[in-house]
Length: 92
Ligand SMILES: [Zn+2]
Image (cartoon, rainbow, N blue to C red):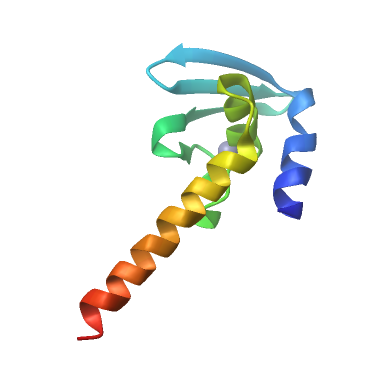
């Protein structure tokens, strides 16, 4: 959660545009990134690799509903369910 707090702290230095259909463009001083909130993907690829929203994802989530921690907890629960399901399916 510490990583998440650091990422969220950087959000104020960004400009976020909603492009419709869960797509956002996040602009920083050194470029812009496009992300799809409902697919949890971003041009920077950090979200996909770490399973924790990247700084751009944090910006979009805060704009969308303001609760980044809730989204991470939901994602973690989903991962745990998936691991448990795989464990049950493949351990027989
Ligand atoms: Zn990103």
